[in-house]
Amino acid sequence: FTAVGSALGAGSFTIHALNIANEDLGAVTPFPSTAPQLLAALANPDVCHDFDAFGIVLNITATPNATALSNSPLCQGNTIQLFGSTTTPGTAAFSWTGPNGFTSAAQNPQIAAAEATASGIYTVVVTANGCTAAPAETAVTVTATPSVLITNNHPAACQGTCASLSAETAGDATYSWTGPNGFTANQPNVEFCDITPEFSGTYCVSAVVNGCESELACTNITVLLPDDPALR
Image (cartoon, rainbow, N blue to C red; front, top):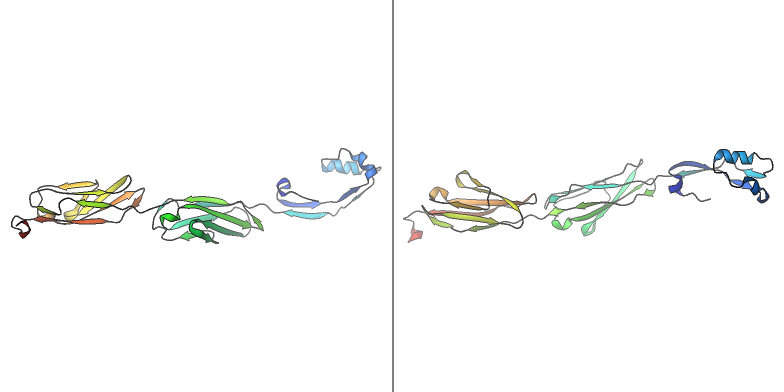
């Protein structure tokens, strides 16, 4: 006897053996499709048969399910968090695989200080009650940290003149400048005119691309007075 789990479904079934003499098969043709029809056929005194009333218990375990999630997208240097789950009752085992040879037997593994090369497909396989679920996948994107370049057009500028700075990075970026005397700005290019010595100091800028912030890039502006030796 062969039972196909997908046909029967999960559960506990009792299998009974039935032996009908060849010469009596015509009395139960077509073969009954329901239990009452079968019992009625076997009640026919002209049918010689043996019936195992006790039967054999067949337990079919449900195939487990699996779900894979992550905290993607995230920025380079942050921690990748993977989440595996199943609604199947019982004790479950998890097996993760991913880029760069990543493997883990934890249900919710983490990858600290993730690089952009950790981007890709992460797959989890769940085993519960001796049965294995179909693999579940989650896509992870780790965005590389952008870099920002400063151009200082006037590192040494005379008092009363103009000085300008510009920032550049790849992609659609938003910028954040800071500098002396509480200076802030949000555009890539800044200019100062009629400058005084108070404008001297360090100016820094960062850029945010795709939600990820660059490291600070900094430069200095020095305002020269008319009697400064650097002007001679």
